[in-house]
Length: 497
Image 1 (cartoon, rainbow, N blue to C red):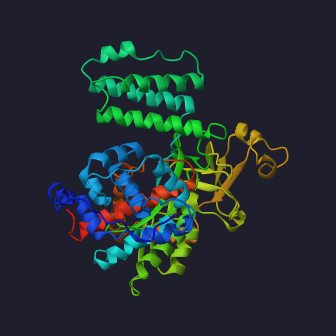
Image 2 (cartoon, rainbow, N blue to C red):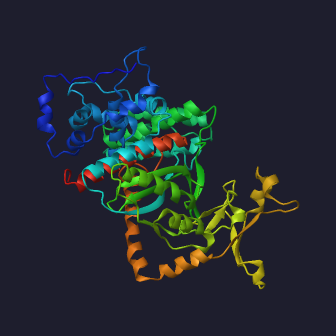
Image 3 (cartoon, rainbow, N blue to C red):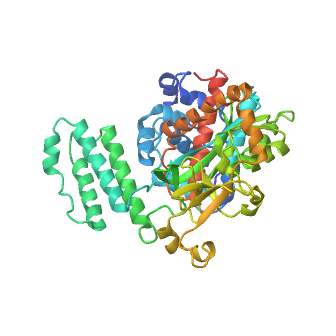
């Protein structure tokens, strides 16, 4: 049951916060300048108003997730720190002596209470509104790009993942204790076979052995390794009967020789490095088709509080320089600053056919998500047949066993070929524009979004998914981007250093 009233912090020790949490502390500043009450309207439909026991305050639960992103902690690591860190308790509106939640509640809150809510767009809109109110968003230029997030299960089987986590736990013990040889002698023997059940039993024994010790238990690095191993064991136990992998994640490619298994987050931000729009897709999706939605969402968020504000320019890499996007920019009244890639152009006959360019690998992916294995230019001597084309060949072995082979392959064909025209008139004009000093000057600012991608991954824990499924990925993106935006806006306004 969801309470309609907030709890008051009544404690004889509450004044200690004024001593241990100074005015310049980041969490005090965040608490004083962010109104989290909007969480009630987002989750009220997922609670019962008059039945059941009293629910944990959803604002406080959201604050736990906020802290998890800001400090990049596991669920158990977050709760353990909140138990002793008074700055955390102050931010969470808890009394110094108050108990904290069980870590399992965080997982339930993510799955049950934040489901079906358009959290990603809502939180970005609220952060942009705050930036406009504080007068820090002035740029009329968007910078767009995508960043990838690896699936929690990438790239390991359950057995491999358990071995990785247990290995990290052992090494954490060896590195933080003065008697590593003692632990090497008392640790249980590793399973000799590739049996998942035996590996689970080994991990349980390893954890018990570490916790029974006197000089390893309580060490932060060791405790965090234990928490990660226990969470992995719990996930495998809960989902082993259906799937231990992430069913929504897909294989994407950063280059022709490297790949990842996970998701892509397509983001647009201003030159002040505040994200104004984002979309989350599976990893194999190309960047080309996301431009229109990112610009539309950004204009809505920026213009909702300033009717005169609009987007004049959009900076992007070669993935966004397709003829369709150049046409979209012309119709939308903004200048697209992107180097056109001749392989990005699709003729009308190929629209919505499921083939998409992976700009990092320089190859196309088919509707089944397979990457082409080779490419070649097909030249026409007779220009009446059309422009020269870039032809891509897909792996015959994959084509023969693909579930789409009956629809995709022609009768008698062993492999699929896909070709695209090279350079349209719009792209030719864009290529000429790319040679100008004006273009070279403007495109220099695109580096800013690379720094933002790095910040999301290495500061706000966006490098690996915390759970499985695209809905969970959207939730993680919503909280991470909101935290990133609010910290950035408060720093730009001079409120936070």
